[in-house]
Length: 214
Image 1: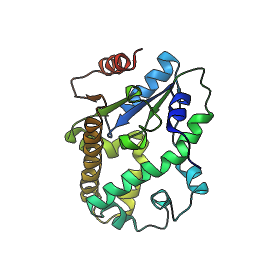
Image 2: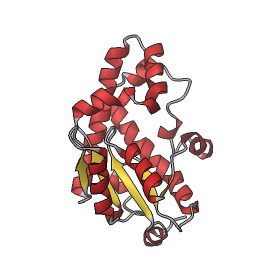
Image 3: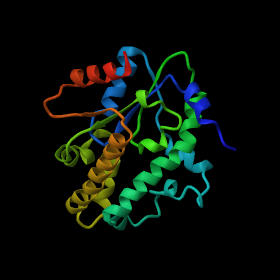
């Protein structure tokens, strides 16, 4: 079954998307939209999606899982990890958009999820998307040490031969993923915002609100 994209855009015109790379402020901004402006939000639920997925069609969604050799997983070639990140996000959209459609439309919805723009432009207006990015140094300094990534860090520390080298290697994938999304946003003429260490949370929030018209 094919769903008309124009109809999807109309039904999801109350959805605003914080796209972009890691450590750029997406989660922080989402909390501010929810707490200060009363937005709804929707988080991805990979385990739920996986239970309904077809392993032959949704191969990226099947990983990571407990049967992996974690040392090989985290230290695989950067381009392979990058492709998995892209495919993983793309496969999630098939399920995520259904959950978006189920949400009440009496209040706006804010989503923070880094995906390739072409995977959401069919159903989210370009004006309702902004790409948030930060520097390579910030990603390297912050990504694996965030509170919501503690389980990943513990997995690396407990299951790889050289945790520090593994973190350094894995960061290369995250930086490349961020750059890939950023370049695609520029190509698709989507507004981007670079978060610097000098930019305050309030300044970033104000700029995003201005773009969205709030």
